[in-house]
Length: 217
Image 1 (spheres, rainbow, N blue to C red):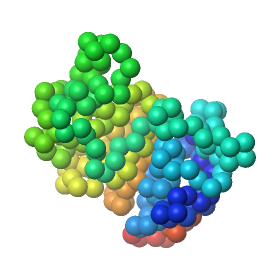
Image 2: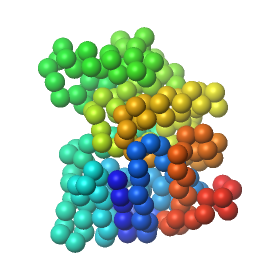
Image 3: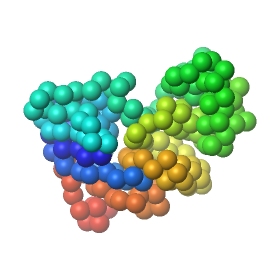
């Protein structure tokens, strides 16, 4: 996946970045307001840059020149928010099944399979309000991957967890992304997460790329 993005939504930080993301985990670090979440939003199709180009698997998702803009729901790009955004009235397997295009029985079977792959099968019938932070993270990850995305975006998904849980979930993310051979972009404030997970480290400051070693945020 390649992204050459300039500008963004007026309410978000201005971006001027050119990046290539290969299969595996890329960690994006930087201070608050650096443009990390804005970059993910542009790739996901939640904001429309003023100029630039975003290409995934050879297909343009956004190209300012010919005015190409693929809507978010057609991009097959999964985004896990910091808030997770699980549907409170649906149990875990129903949350995971929501984005699966298949008959109900097949959707349930596939949802349970993904819960098992994220080590959350025991949570299948539970509502989000009854889940711990780590449990909810596993359900949200299963829901994202069950849609068979071509890319996975993770916006501070582990920030509210203690170090042990962050490490365990991070190891699972790395293993699943390697198995699926897709690019995964992880936005984080924790440099230890980036060091442990990031096959590549990208640092942003003021919407631009900077030397990650020289910025100890």
